[in-house]
Amino acid sequence: MKRNHWYSIKNQSLAIYTRNAGFDLAIYDEYSSEVQKELRRKSIKEALWQIEDACDDAGFELAPLKYGVYVISLSNPLSIQYRKKRSQVIYVGIGNVLKRIENHFNNSLFDFMLSLSGANFDFHFSYPSLKGTKSYYKHVEYLMLEYFSENYGGLDEKKRFPVLNSISGANKSYKGGGSWWNTPLKIAGKKPLWELAPTNFSDFAPLDFEE
Image (cartoon, rainbow, N blue to C red; front, side):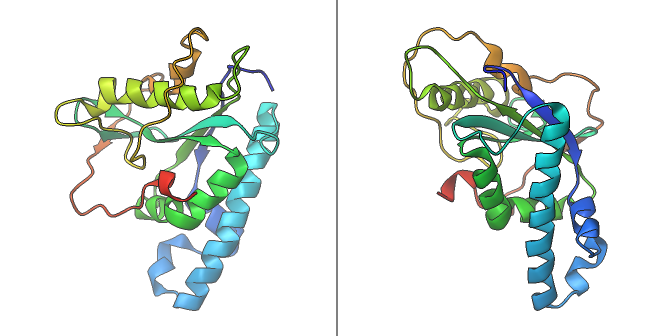
């Protein structure tokens, strides 16, 4: 796996995960609570397998990435209207990537994707590296969240991060490394056709609280 480089897998679908697990997401609310639990369990297992498989196809292994940085975004044609301008990014995270994504699905990501059951999602993964440092990946997360707040979330009363982030990263004050890290935060490619706006009734748990 190349360091300081982004690998992307796109158009991941909860509806497909669920269908491959033997269920129909369109009638989720009609299932009993026991069936819903089984649907979640099997669909999350399928999701992790599909994400790993897509990463293999893209030329890298996800399981060894213990000190990674990753971004979860909406796929085209959807975006989110943040305070300053639109972005497709919903979360920036770090750590043991495969384990954390599993935790995310079990905590809040499944519910978030369920609420947008017709939407697809993109995942971006990277292995940050800076000579002479041990926690550069944490600093990269900090840089990314600061960049997001400044360019998308806004800085009026407080810093505003992607919809499923709630806290800033750790500033290690490292110098150098370049600006390779901001690639998945920039709007690029086909212009999204739809904008979503979070409301005061949104109650999805921030993904950075599940450690």
